[in-house]
Image (cartoon, rainbow, N blue to C red; front, side):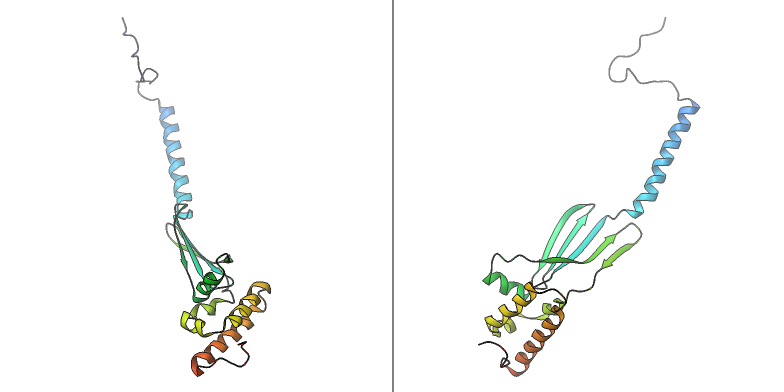
Length: 178
């Protein structure tokens, strides 16, 4: 006389030894899973760090993702961004992509675009900007926000040259509105 099958959560479990065919399929499945993981895992980034720059003020924004989850967003302001935020609180930054670093298992993938024309504006300090007449800064910002990026490089160079003259001579150039 045989005993009845056990009742409970193991009732459908086959308690006998697996056949060689079941063993082969199990090994093949495990091999495929390990192979697929070995092929895909080195190509999947575990950390992505992207940097964006404001096309008007030169402010930087860094976003760091670990395993696809946003962990940290840092904004590095500039003197020009602070000047705008105090006078126009509803100003919206125009962040454009700058660099992207993807950390993979065995390497780092780096993608960078050309630096925006406003990059040299990052070196302006708040004391120098405070000595510039407000009308001149507004005129410069209007030029940056309304025109296309083709003329930005020349206007940024001219503005920085005027600021250098201001720092060296201590008096604003005659071309500045008073």
